[in-house]
Image 1 (cartoon, rainbow, N blue to C red):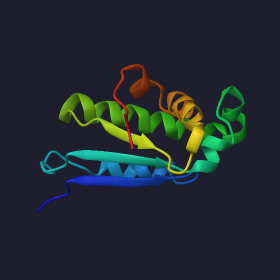
Image 2 (cartoon, rainbow, N blue to C red):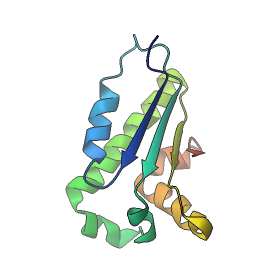
Image 3 (cartoon, helix red, strand yellow):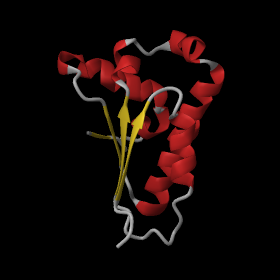
Length: 116
């Protein structure tokens, strides 16, 4: 029995670790069917926008873009659509959608994000 689903709880400091963990998945992991990313609600409720790059720091913002490119590759080579979300937002779902679009622009632009 192999890895079927990978779920990560992400805060700004752990994003590089998530990318590195996903990079260890090889073609031999044929059972993998899903990747879920749960974004820390403080990031969403804190507001994400142009000023976020400055507040997160350039290195952390770059790590989000690295994850974005990797998730695109999972779609292109394995047809795995990532699930991305944040629990407990209530009426703040619009903020979550904006957050995902800003932090993970390519998978958002391509319509590859499934809400979780």
